Image 1 (cartoon, rainbow, N blue to C red):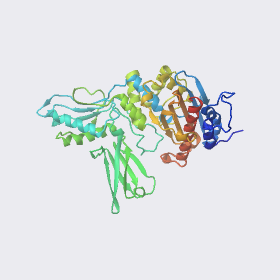
Image 2: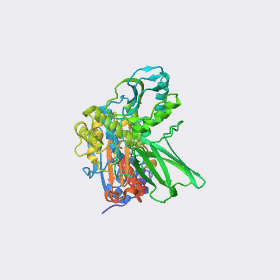
Image 3: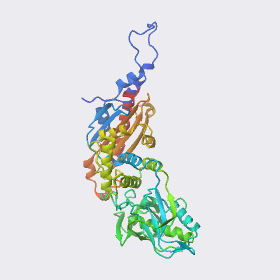
Image 4: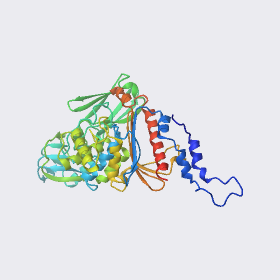
Length: 494
């Protein structure tokens, strides 16, 4: 039989040990040990079954919580049930990158000349060489153009190449996603603006003015590698076609309204970066021909170098904003350094899985990417908690995790425990894993995985951006996650 509970009953229990005595002339010393407030709170805690039943989530649930320092397992439910980790995978990717590349590693983007500079001209070719910087943006390219001009360069006698071969090219992260989703871009060794182009439209009478640019805070260089056409239709909202190396988009007129903007993915990231640099260089008085792709090593003399911020900062941003491109790029770069260049993203993810087995002591996890965008990656709650215990609450990963405010209605103001964790969300998949500092200072490691994979599988590809019912389902899952953590903070941390 499942017991019912209420927040009121729980809060009454929480305050039961602090009431004023009801009788006069009571004994000065109790005949029995005086119950403490948290004793009542623990007895008033709803059971796991009650929490799950109240959420009415559906699908499958697996979780595990353990002492983060001793490894003592405290509570479990289906701990070896394999489920997609969603963006919780990024926590493992972050640990993989920090361990392999190092917290202070920087990614470098270089301008390489195949000949000397004479009379303001590079006597040969100029190569924009990517070094797998996932944070390269238009402002960085603008500074590189200024630095090139400062060296007296006004043009080149040869060709302008772009080289992204530091990493294997990946057209999409997950082929099951709709074409227009900006969080499913291409991956290369040369990436700009998270490999997204900014599409903006404004109503002009009976038509629309549209623009495709590589904007930053202050710059908006137009691009030719992506183009947009407004079409008189209601659906689909977007269509995509690779037209001789150009991203050719159409958008439904009925979806535009008076105006707006959004980011679209780029499928030729190296040419995109080269095209933007060509425009920025021209603004500095440096004339370059159209960019061409180059394979192999970019040999020559380095004229300009742009260095990223350290990997620890990049990883922290990735965990905070859950950027898929960053996860894939740092994961691929770690594989290149530690185990040799992988053939593709799946191969690099397999390398990370092997690393997790060897270094973190996991048993059954299997990744097919580094971001968690694909639902074909699987992780168990037990493996995730093992990884977190191995990494430790005082290790390199923990301080980079996002602080998540407690939100459970079971405790006043959500509770006074501290959550440092990574969230993950796919359609009908919701995950959370990390560390909890309980009220008494005890550190807990936890992983909660939920997924209704049957409902997810039934979604048509074109409807995967906002399928019916997915938001409500995710909201219920997050409620369960926070209620479980609130339960653990009282039960094991007071």
